[in-house]
Each structure stands twice: as structure tokens, then as C-alpha cells.
Length: 615
Image (cartoon, rainbow, N blue to C red; front, side):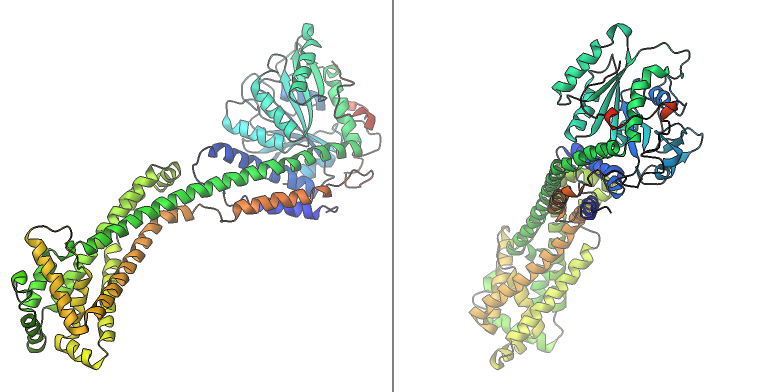
């Protein structure tokens, strides 16, 4: 790995942290965050990792620019062969064309650079989404040219691909025209090149004869003003071509061809280009990765908002159950009727104080002399508690759905789930009745267990036996619902009589303090069971978050990965002559370059400075 194993491993660790998608939720500015994520992942895949894995691989120069800048014509003219198809129809370049020498063909046809683009070779034009690889015998080894789609194409996929290809370049050959060089879109890309210290040359094409030199100076001024002073700048005059797809005359592109040939001929020059662009891309990670980590933090904040909304909705549902448990409403209807059957009278309030003993005697007779209707009361109580649970769950689900629908992230998740699924989320789950029934039965068994445990004392056991275990247990269940708030008129009297009578009878069995303790335990157990049911209901919402939310440590891991890259930054290999990884003849040998142009030396390929500009 040429001593860069730590840096390469740090980059791979960083890339691994970008999967699964760390930005799944709709939050403020998330589209810009996602675009930055795609660019970062793409540059790691397409450039940083492949380039660092093979630091001496052939140089890739991407020819990019605005619509109608003549990129395809320029590439054909530089390499001296019709490898791309110019034309007036837009977009012209549907599949990017990579032009390489036969010596470098194997490197580019394999999935080293731009691994996500399938390769197409031969004479076909290539389909969108593919990379067409063409070999030209006159192109010197060590350098390939890639004709990219327009950065301002009317086709969004072409614009995205153009940005991806430029991020994968060792060298940008940025092409614009004398009439469009001041447009904002190209300058956005040029400023990006400045921020990432990308090796860059600007080609100003279609310059009218009377504007030669004038436009060049103005463009140089703009480059200086945008922090790109010293960028290598070439002018290509506007010429009348004999036909639409004709190549430019050789003298018009000779300075560009000479410059590129000189880079291809000199291992040191290529290494300088690679180090400049690689270093700039690595340095940019110090800003881009922490910014992405901040975006992940915003995602977690949005997720916590949704979880908080869900928790508040179901806490409200539990509070509604608490209210229903204590306001006496459960002692209406069927429970009241079964209670009256249970004690054998409907005139409770009038007889409550004077006839507690008589009621107790009747209870004893009922449990000892004939089958008691305790099972009916127990079923009625079970049904009432189950209905209270379902009402609380329905109310909580409706509140949670409303809360999520008002939040951009929640609304997007609900839309993704579909109308039918969202509708189901707005009410309790279909299996809640069965689960609540099982929970209430479990609670009733728990209450009977409390009575059995409390009645272990011999004197208490005798009194429990006189009432029967089920009878004492039912009295304790009714005592749980002791308040009468929310009832009116005669219902207050009936419910009050029911709860007070049950408590008086319990006190006769267990004593005051024991009854208070047993009631608190029974109520707490029921509440815990209902809380568990509602918690399970809430997971129908939170499961939507869990399905998309990245691991909790993602933001911290991204920052740590960026720090690791910084720590290993010094491992970028220094240039060394005779490194030996170039294809045969790639560094020396005096072989003619593009279209028979002799190769230049290292002094012919300055990357910065405007000296030696050609018109």
C-alpha cells in the first residue's frame, strides 16, 4: 500500500459509516445535507479510495463545463480522433466517454475508477448510466480524458453525473465560452475546485477574433477575485467548421495538447497533480464530515421529537385510564347490575351503615349454601376494564397520529407507510382486545394471589374462608375503583355504596391498614399492566423510526473517522522518480504524444501561474 495503509483504512472506515443512510428523516435543510452526503460518498468511492489504493495509476482529466461549450469537439480535436459525438441538440453527451491509451485500457475498463458505472467498449454510443471507454493509439500512456455531461443540463441526472465525474477527477479541464464565462453555475463548480484545491485548468472556447485577449483578461480577473488566481487558462478561438461534427484545426488546440502531453510524459508532473488534488480532497473532509455529523445530530433531534410526541400521546392515554379507574365510571351499567346480584339488594345507600353485618351474612350464605354469581361480576369487571383500556389506546393513537402529521419528519414517514397503514395507526391495534383481556385476567389472578397471601394468618384465614377467596378477591377489585368523581344523581349513590360497602367488608376481613396496602398494590399492578399494553401500542409508531434511523453513535463515529483521516494525512506518498507502477513507456522513452506531438518535459507543465499562456 506504499505506506498509506492507515490513511486508506481510515477512509474505508469513514465510507462504511455512510451506510445505512444517516439522513432518512425530513428536516430543515435535509435536501442540501443529502446532496452533500451523496457527493461525499461518491468522491470516496470514485476517487479517494481508488486513487489512494493505486497512487501511481494513470491520471484522469475530466473535461466538464456548460451546455454548448464544445467539450466533445474539444476532446475529439485534442486526441485527433472522433471518439465523441458533437451536435447542436441538447443534451449531446448522454453517456460519458473516457478516452485512454491502449496501455491504460485495462485500468479504466475494470471497476477501479467510478466503480458504480458499468463499462461499455467498442463502437457503441453507450446508454445513460454507463461509462463508454474508447482507446486511441495516439494518446500517450499515463493520462486519460473523460468527456462529461453538461453541468447545467436540462436533465437532472446529467447534472448529477457531471458533478460526480468532476469529483472523481485528478485534473479538471473546465470548459466555458466567451459568451457564458460569467454565468453563476460554472462559478459554483470553480469555487468548489478552489475549496478542495483541485488541480484545475480553464479552457475558454469560441472566442471571437476581435475579443481574443480581452475576454481572457476579464476571465483572469474573475478567477483572481474568486480565489483562483494563477489557474492555467487557455483560449480557443471561434472558428467556422466545414461541418457540424468537424474537429478544430490542430493549431487551435495545440497548446492544450502540448500541456497534457507534457503531464503524461513526466511521472513527477503526474505525481504533483495527484498530490494536489488528493490533498485538497482529503483536507476538505475536515469540514465536510463534521458538517455531515451535525446533520446526523439534527436527524436524531427530529427522531427524538417524534418519540417524545409518541410518548406524550400514550402517557396521556395512561392518564385517561387512571382517570377512568378512579372516577367511578367503571362502576356503571353491567358492573353495577352484577354487584347488586352479588350482594342480593339494590337498596345500598339506605342500608349501608346499619346492615353491613346482614350483608356479610348474606354473602356467607351465598358462598356456602348455593352457587354465587361472582363469576358474572368478575366477567363484567373484566369487560369494563378492557373497554377502558381500549378507549385509552384509541385516544392515544389518535393523538400520536395528529402529532406526527403536524411534523415534517413524521408526515413523511406516514406518507411512506401509505394511507391504509396510517389509518390503522390512528386507532388501537386489532389485537389489543385479546391482549387487554389477557392482561386483565392476569391482574385478577394477581389480586386473588394477594388475598390468598394476606389470608395466610390463621385468624384472617378464617374470615376469608367465611367470604370465600373469590368473594374477597372481588371485593378488593372493586375497592380499586373507589372514587365516585364524574358520576351524577343516583349513580353517585349507587357507585359510592358499591365502593364503600366493598371496603367495609374488606376491613372486616383484613383490617384498615391491610386494606389500604392491598388496594394500593392491586391498583399499581393494574396500572403497570395497562402501561405495558400502551407501550406496546406506541411501538407501532416508533417502529417506523427504528426501521430507518441509523445507529446512535453515527455522528460521533463520523467525527472520529474524520479525525483519523487527519491523523493519517501525512501518509500521502511523496513523489518519486522511477516509481515503477506506470505502464511500460509511461514515464520515459521519447514516444510521440497526442496526434504526433512530441512530449514535453517537466518544465513544460506548470499547474499554476499564467505564464506561457497561448491564444
